[in-house]
Image (cartoon, rainbow, N blue to C red; front, side, top):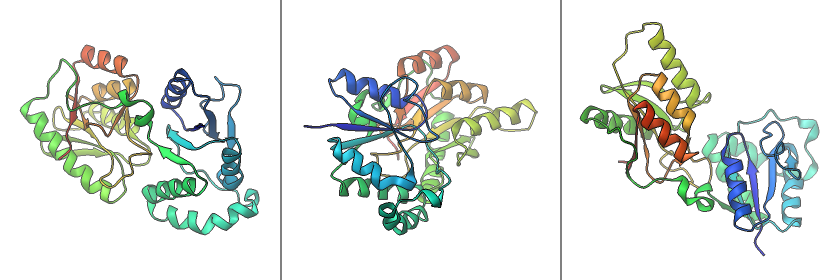
Length: 275
């Protein structure tokens, strides 16, 4: 019998996936890493774990009949406490540390490999909720102009370079210039910084497009980029005209609310076939 482990990070996505799994008649095992409590306030039974005790956690998943797992929500690398590492996890430490030296993509691929060694297949959030991703096309009343389309193409070229360097999944382009790139602090910080620059009168090109896409060689079962209503609001505050994102490669959280907000603010949402 199939049982799914939902391994949660921060944000709305874990709750959306939990609801979808339960509506489909499943009894998912809910899990979250210490410091990233998202599901436990709303659910009584949530498995808590630490990376220092990864092997006991994987053993518990196996013992409870888990055969597949889905990762959902934002996490960052926690500070490890060497005193908490158990002997079995210590055996894996060289592999884990080597993967972490290869960046986020390398770390995530190693996580998927480890899951497979415990007989657990990793699914993408889009496999549980296919409606989280959009088909190609403009989703909103507002339409991208010819300049917006040029900016989007420019932004996607920047993202290809960023992705090859394992830097981030978002950038802002305007009038052929790259105004900002997304790094570890994330999308909200990047958009807020641009809004602050405009508020302080820093001379910048008008308009612009926020571009979002997975990294070129990213395993799309884990860490797909996501957009939500707060992203639309941030784009509007930053004085941008819209969002161009990879069709099929970006998760839309609270999609109906997101589209309604975009239409109210006059922000376009364009699902692109990435060049």
